[in-house]
Length: 212
Length: 242
Image (tube, rainbow over all chains, first blue to last red; front, side, top):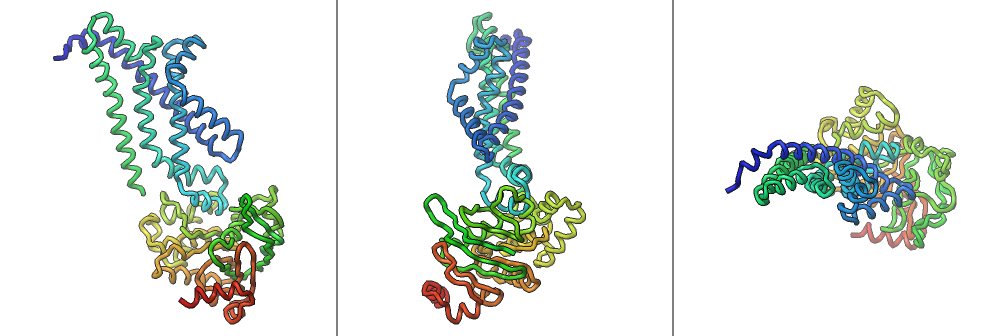
């Protein structure tokens, strides 16, 4: 049986880690979404140098391990573990989000842009009023996956003393010499974050599908 | 009004439009026919610069379409376009579909745009569908909404790119009726179609294209009775006698 005294006696540490994981995830989630949208638009906009820049970013970032990006900020730029981890998480996830959003935009039939442009709308107006609202629906499920991955990937902070949930788990484990139970509780805390996220995305998906 | 002067267009090595000379006057209804791949749709799409021309000149009301300095968005306000597959915005209601460009491009007020949209919906015979979504309409109804959407901008020219080719046979008539009414009101229309009955009845002029060239231009009476070109004769015999 699980030893719940591990949880109750170290609750303050679990909660501190939990709080930091939430903070780090939330910041990374919002900034990677913004960054991802910008990169996606760079890749699609009818301006060649921007396309190249966007492609280079995505291909470079998503093809190196998250851990190395984290080390770059932690060891290279000497940021604190929390900052280095959150920054790395943001940059890493943004490359995947950019791809998801780009795929969503491209999956809107070409005729939609043609119809919008031929009625006199500018490229920007057509994008904003016609293409993006349709792309959002398509993008929600893959975006949800990325957000869930992001929350789980935030455990990378533990490697650079990022004060997150996993880090505190390690701490409790080395203090109590208990391994199994400690990490079961850590996993439970992650589930508290990811399960609602998962259901939230599912709900959003259903609600948006209705308007079609 | 629309003048093609020795227009050529290439897709890479493929020569889509060859030395096109064509003048379309105000109020004229020109029907473009020809076999698939003959460049009819490309010709049409050049008029509002959905496709760019490679050589020659194309002007509308004296304005050079290909010129980078021409404000293409301003030019397009004046040209309505109806597509084979309608391309209505699926996330917007019928009314919102029609009101979008008048609101955003012409800067009409909500009330004004709505009044105009309803007027054109009535005109195409589906005023009762204003608050439906496109997915709730039949193909024929969707295409009539698309026509109303084009008309709501108050264009001088309407382009139709095979407007009935994606429709069930039963629904072709209702769309053609709207187009006929429009033609009788004096709208300048360029229509790519395979509807020979429509061409014969409504067209002021028929343009026959094959392999990127305009092979023949004639009134419907001349064209159907006695096509000059062998290729046109062959085409007609194939589609009229089946």
